[in-house]
Length: 169
Image 1: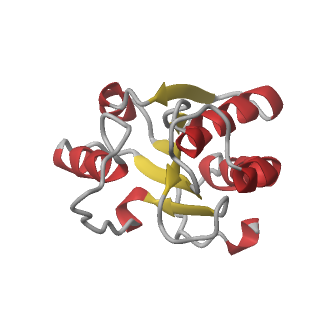
Image 2: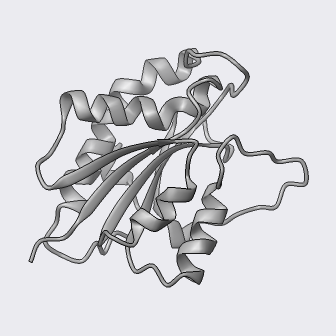
């Protein structure tokens, strides 16, 4: 029996770099679509995402992150490896942020192995275009995520990825 795999783009395309997850999902669909993988654009509507994750063995969430990396830098990690820092003034443009998704999947007993392809954002102000660093790294980032999909998500093993993305650089 083959694994059910989902690749999911998250983000608000009206908030500049916050739309990077959706932009990369579109690029994957146009250039690297793979048979046997379901692709979803959840944009900012992440409540239904929790329900859908229960139908999959593995999922990759593609989203913009603010983690102190260089703008446009990619970090791939499993959701349970993520560390979250409480920010008093943090406001997410999504219905659920990654911390909420992690908490709900754990609380609801969802068994899918969930990975995050987080791209460091520079500008999440209102506007529809990506910042220069994200535009310049878009092709390379899409290729790296496609390689991750091919080597980790599509592997015959049960997604044993440790979070090390050095082979993808």
